Amino acid sequence: MATTPQTPASPAPAVTHRPKRRWGATVLGVVFLAVMLFPLYWMINTALQPDASLVDVAPVPTSLDLSGFSSALTDQGANLLTSLAVALGAVAICLAISAPAAYGLAQFDLRGGKTIVFGTLITQMVPGIVIANALYSAYVDLGLVNSYFGLMLADASLGIPFAIVLMRSFMVSIPREVIEAAEMDGAGRVRTFVRVVLPMSRNSLITAGLFSFLYAWSDFMFALTLNTTDDVKPITLGIYQYIGAHVGDWGSVMAASVLSAVPAAVLLVLSQKYIAAGITGGSVK
Image (tube, rainbow, N blue to C red; front, side, top):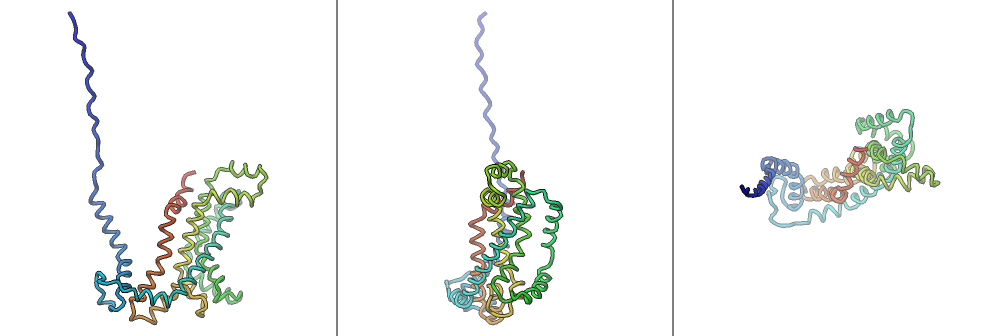
């Protein structure tokens, strides 16, 4: 008896699972973002309405009045340049100290290395006012009061502990074979550090430098304590005195605050990918 050939059964269609849209989480995230950005919006809104009093500011500006920004640039432009110079100097000092320290703690078998790292973390818990008062006495003896270098050195101390810990965690992950290969080619420890380690640690260097810049840019305690004249006046101290002198002109005050936030915001946007790589680079060895 002839048998009819059986055709293979067609495979069942694959079931695709579409990810469910979590509208609740999205709405909650938008609400949190709006709450966090509202002070920034109100600051810009007030700056664009310089003629209105603080209680009469409209929720939305009806016209773009930039006279507040013009007044702020005239009064605070020099202070912005001072803050920029001090912050860049603090970054240079911070990286010049923390990068070699992090390399030594990461690659050399130093006695008490872990204790040094722990002590570095402890220094970040000391209140800034305590350090400022102690520095003032030392600065008077050294002649560093009311000087750019003195303020740079003080602001650099804010970022050095964090930079050492961050770069050490990154440099620990550098393969020892790479350093040994450079030394076998005739490079000394300094040349190996400059030509091999630093280029490989670019992300952590940028991250540490950015945080050091933000620490110095937003510093108020050292600027207030270590300066007794107007020779060196950062933007934070300028806004503080600006409020006292122009407490009725909130448009100019808010415009100065917006201008002071622009450099930090631009740096964060431009270097966000380096920050992510620098912070997570040392997490996996």
